[in-house]
Length: 545
Image (cartoon, rainbow, N blue to C red; front, side, top):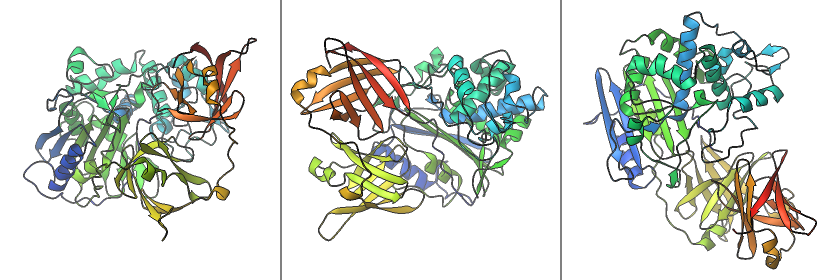
C-alpha cells in the first residue's frame, strides 16, 4: 500500500535562487521540462511567492491534451496534515482544548492505547510523536487502489482498542498517517461535525479557497487533473473516511497560493495566529530537523511539508523570513521535493533526470538476486515480465527502470542503483544511491537466507487452482502463465507462486503463503492467505481466470 507521504529531510542554506526571466530558477525550470519530456511527470504546476510577487508556472499536458492552469485540481495528500494542525492550533488558542490534553478526552467512547500509564496527547499526535504505527493493521481495503475509502470510525475504534504501544508517547519521532487521521477525527468530534465540513468552515472559506475540499464538487471535478502512478498508468483518486485528517484535501495552485501566503504572513487572516503556532518547532525529528504541528523545519530555516497519493505528488514550503515560498503540484506519483527545495534555495541539489531505456530480458536477468546492505537489511531484485522490481527488507517492491546498462532508477522514491561487475562480466554487487551511497554485495546461493523448498508443479493440475477468489478487500486472480501459476490481487501486480506441497504455495517477493482448500469431493473451493500474522480466507467465486 502506498503511503500518503515520503518524507525527505534536507539541510539547506537559504540564499537567493539563481535569477531567471521567470519566477522559477533556470535550473528548476530546465529540470521540470526534462522530466516532463522524459515522461516522469504528466504535468507540473508551480505557484511561486517572491516578495510581493505571486506567479504560477504550468508545464506539460493533461490527458485531454490541454495545458493545466492555476485552477486545475490536484490531490495534495499529506499537506492536508498542515490544515489539521491549523485546526488544532485554532482550538488551542480559543481554549477549546489544551495541547497537552489526552486525545481520549475528545473521544470518550474510544479506548485509546497508552504505555506505562502515559496517554497520547493532542500535541504528540500533531508532532508525529504518538508512538502509533504509520497505518493500522486492520486497514484491508476492498479496493487497494483507493485504500482509505472504507476505513471508517468503527474500524478505527476497533484497532485502537486492541493495539499495544511499543514505547512511551513522546519518546521518538515516527511518521504516522494513522495518528494524524485520529487527530482530525477527534477534532471533528469536538465540533460535532465532519472533518471536511470543519475544514471548509474554519480554513477554506475564510481564505477564499473555493476550489478546494475533501470532496470533489462539480466544479472541482470538471477541473481535475487525472492521476497517474509512477509507471505512467492511470491511477484512481483517493477518498477518505475516518482518516481524512491525514490526506483528504484536493486543491489548486491558485487556492494553495492563498494558503501559502497566509502561512507566510503576507496575507493577514483570522488564521494568522493559529498558523504561527502550528509552525513553531516543538520536537526533534533528527539531529538537523525539527517538527512543529505537522510543519517541518530544516536547521537552515525552510518550513515545509510534502504529500502524495496513488496518482499525485505535492510540495509546499517557504523561507522562515517569509520572503519566498512555493507550491508544486503533479498528477504523477513521482517525487517533486527536490525541485520544490531548489525553487527556494540556491544550491539545493536537483536529482538528474533519468530517461528509461529498454533492455532485453536476458540482460535484466543478470541483475536478479539478493544484495546485502547490512546483516538485517537485504535488497532483493527480481524480474516481472519485461521489468525489474526492487524490495528492501520489510518494504513493498517498487519498479526500477534502466537508464543505461547497469544503471537503474526509481520513480516512486528519489533513489537509483548502480550494478557493478567483476572482470568476468558477472554482476557481483550494487551501489544504492539514496541519502548517500551504500554498497551491497550480491549473495551467492549458499549465502542466501533459507527459503521454502519448491516442489515441481504439474501444469496439468492448474485447473484445480485457476480462478477468482473473493476477499473482503479485493479479488485474487490465479492464472496459468506458461508452466507456472501467478496470483494477482486487485490493484496490484501479478506475482508467481511456487508449490511447497499439494495445495500449498508461497510467494518469493513477499512473505506470504496461499493454502487452497478442498471440499469432500476434492474440489478447490477457497484459498487462505497467510500474511503478516493473519489468516484470511476467500471463497472461490469463479473457475475462470
